[in-house]
Amino acid sequence: MASRSDENGRERIVQANPPDDGAETGAGGRSLEDQALEIAAQNRSSVESESRMSQDLRPREFREYVGQKPVVDSISIAVMASRQRGDTLDHALFHGPPGLGKTTIAHIIARELDSQLIHTSGPALERPADVVGLLSNLKAGDVLFIDEIHRLSHAVEEYLYSAMEDFRVDFMTGSGAFAKSINLPLQPFTLIGSTTRAGMLSAPLRERFGLAYHLDFYSTEELAQVVTRSSGILKVEIDKDGALEIAKRSRGTPRISNRLLRRVRDFSEVRHDGRVNQSIASVALEIEGVDSLGLDRLDRLYLTTLSKNYNGGPAGIQALAATINEDQQTLEDVVEPFLLKIGFIVRTPQGRRTTLEGFEHLGLPPRLNGPAGQGTLL
Ligand SMILES: Nc1ncnc2c1ncn2[C@@H]1O[C@H](COP(=O)(O)OP(=O)(O)OP(=O)(O)O)[C@@H](O)[C@H]1O
Ligand SMILES: [Mg+2]
Image 1 (tube, rainbow, N blue to C red):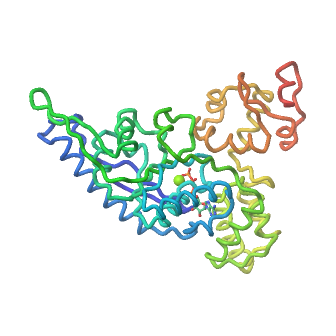
Image 2 (image 1 turned 180 degrees about the vertical axis):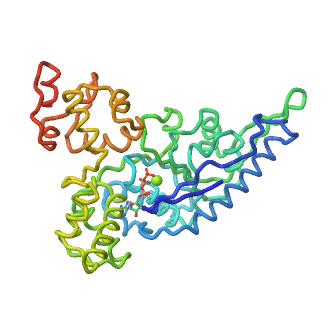
Image 3 (image 1 turned 120 degrees about the vertical axis):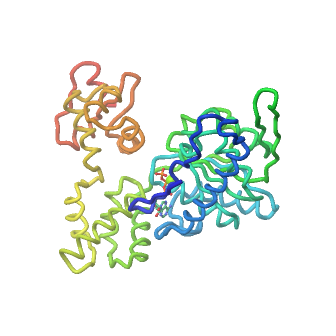
């Protein structure tokens, strides 16, 4: 099991490495139970190393968590109520584009519940033994956080159904004449799922979450608060307009605000006196290839390809991904949500199209040839 952290403080437990014996039971004489126990131990130790990782800029309490007011209001009431009743919190699902604070809010919930957070991800729970091991090791009230929950395998997902609903798992051990069914009771726990793709969750899994929230992009004012808060922690001297300039170019995303703040700080330390104002922020971010609306090189490449190569569309996502030579999922998860949000593209049954505003931003004349072109004016 390994864990990594990128420069934005985003952490993720990557693939657990259970023994690759290729079979559920019997291989090498090791039962599913043995494998499950071993994996549980691996998961525990990675959780411990996870919690030692620096979480510098991550808000630790609801009152530090900027924006997303309806979500914070609702979840904090649910947390308070469950604390008062001495109950476990209902399972909760957070969905929305990357970097908007899903992992952060899961950590806050666990902290407010005084619970331990066990952090794993859909791709790490590859086999049923992985999830049985993890679940059987949970203590009462623990918060199990599954990042990228849409990437759970179907087999693993099935174990979660009874675990979430009845706090038990049923599994088979042994084979042939020695096969027996084991019904394992679990301690009551809270599952928090996070996904950028709510649509890819199966209906049975989605229905088992008592609480489900969509996180939306942040306003410029909210992001300016994020920048100001982070500047305080990083000890960067920044004025109000400097913070606003970074906020405006952050694509509605706090993770990007924090990344851009670090780049601007570097620039100011090397070329100026370390302090940040509006003009320093804007020069630094131009150098970074971030334009006045926060579009980066990949956003502009996507928009230019759709607008020039495909005459503003309609174009299918696969064709666009192939032309740009970029992963389709990255385009769908990272690039498109913001371009849709600011109205530079639209999604139609025929494919993606550039809007009038999108053409204008690129300084291109809108293509209005035929019915497809009309669609670009939506
Ligand atoms: N509401 C917020 N207030 C202040 N800072 C925030 C907020 N939300 C997120 N951040 C900052 O943005 C960073 C990224 O947030 P987080 O890791 O929670 O995003 P995420 O939604 O889990 O992203 P992903 O889908 O990529 O896992 C955090 O480390 C934190 O510093
Ligand atoms: Mg996350």
